[in-house]
Figure (cartoon, rainbow, N blue to C red):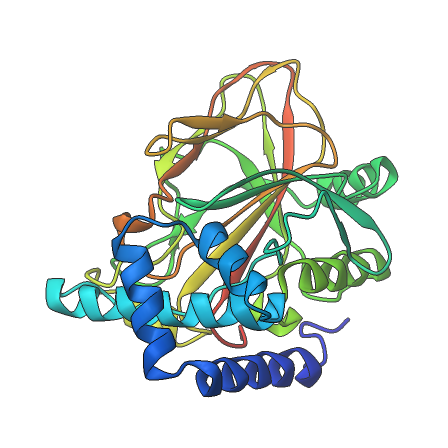
Length: 303
């Protein structure tokens, strides 16, 4: 049983080529224009529309905007002594698609936000795939642990009152198929993901608001980062629909994503800092139960 999937150099090389092309396209005049537009309060979609009207390719324009604004945020972060931003996974939404072709399945885009960087997705998994994940995980469930940032190990945390388990990457055809779909959806290599975790919340169970990234100030963080760098994105997939409660909450954005079987919510965080507005939690299950699968994505290959 393999614990790691084979690397996917095509995804990594394609990302590197896009970044190189974007850097080559950022002339001093273009850089100045983007910064001036951002400072004037114009949003990325407005700037993208203007660039496309001037003849820019949509994908290249989006990459140029992302790279320029990310570097600007890094410069501001450096002045404020915040961590630098990292490249992050995520669906391609520059053309505001209603659906995304993931190769073996078409996924619906139900909602997208810029801050936090959040996308709600419909029909990521089929009902049969949801049931198969629950069935495969059920016999392996144990009290959920969280990362102990003081030591770099794991610990029981009273803020998280669920049971859970991890699948190894690529450990079955089902897991491999889902991981490949996620990689295509989020444009992120399979090997940069932690193993898919399945969690079960009974009545009253919850996960109080927290951040998914590893706090750079904690003593155990350096040892955690050795396994693949920071977390830069989270995908939560709903495997059933609870009777009441169990939504995914984002207190800073004041929104709650309702759990619907087969749907998912993705959120990315370019730096390990509260400025990403990615504080999130699992609201208490009021009636019934909740099953979810979580995929955390790292900067580099997770080992």
